[in-house]
Length: 167
Length: 410
Image (cartoon, rainbow over all chains, first blue to last red; front, side):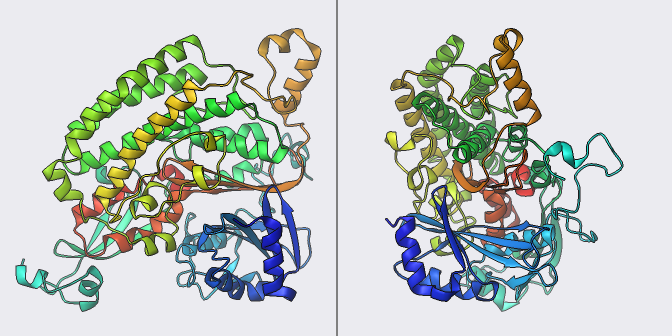
């Protein structure tokens, strides 16, 4: 067993300057790391005998249109069964170049999750073996989960975004 | 087919790499998207050499309904019906998992009685889910009788759902903070009679297949996966346990007071169709044990938590009490105060770890809600599992993996 504070201390020892920020909330440690080093960090977390984050739970993307140069977040959830602890890693990517290294060589199951993030957000995963759309039609030319695509028909005035708590 | 030639390969991958064909022809076959043997809309384009599969390519997304986008425009209470439509064989687990995610975000204190009620419902749902999956494996191996017997038992479970929430398949069961009412007297009667009659009926059905020579010959060694590959492909639930890895969210990350109950996590050895079937059968027995423990030790207390901002007030109060009417209106319109934050919560669904990654910015709808849909992740392993197998094996491998189209395509 390893609690979140002890885990954070270990990660700080291992990755020092690569940890840009960290937060423990709702029983989970979130660590932000530079996009360039995500592959190396996850490889080390997986290999490290004490930490052994051997299970990839989830990869997903988030769109923050208002934060300049940090428009996209790619979120990795890892699980260490040995220590029974979960870890959330985050990288932020700019809209001009939303690309990050693929981790399909470390976790084959990342394949479809990365394709899904590409499909819905347009995040490019470098070195991905087969980066195509997965749930949407191949001929689609936009990324539907980005915030600029409103769910409602834009011509309707009775259902505008103000009524849903957002402008 | 030349028998000697067939035995000259030691493993499917060797066969695949040999590039040798029986008569020099490789045929391309579409398995699905709409085919009675696929139990849902899945397309697999198989390259076959005679009857042996040498490669396959999957297409998914036929019934994609944009749940994650929809969730960004719905108040929190209105997201429950979306979760129904993920794994529709065990929708109460999806509903209650979502409620628990919200309760984690608002840090609600849940009475013990609610936890136990949830455990009973979730285990009933697990039984229903496993009954369908295991009986369908029977159908695909040629035993149609095994499909009809469990439906009588599943019907009883659906009647129990009806008694709680009025719905059967897409249940929309419970609320954030608990349930709309306590278990009714009819529910108690029906649950007692279910607990009494189910083990015997289940045993009869189980004995029809468990040691059946034909069934064993068809399923043993079919669609196997090693524990290492299973982990690499992110398998969870009974599929992972059939490969010999004892990971169960109910034990590793307990929720809803699962730590109070005594049960066994069954594991398999070979990770093949027979092991997957056997693991599910044993899990049904364990679920009955859990229900008996939860029902026998049901704590006194309320069936709802004290979260007036999220829990719809009683209808009688809404009509007669101004404050209740205001709360009712606020909740229906999504005007409640939601803390900002990021939550990941997971439950052991019918076919694996069902997770909810919720980002709230304090608005009335989630900023982002991502579902960890177990079969979307583990369905990737399917081509590797069927390479070197026959087409009829591919069919039973698919049904034994319990891939649910609604969950796969979100």
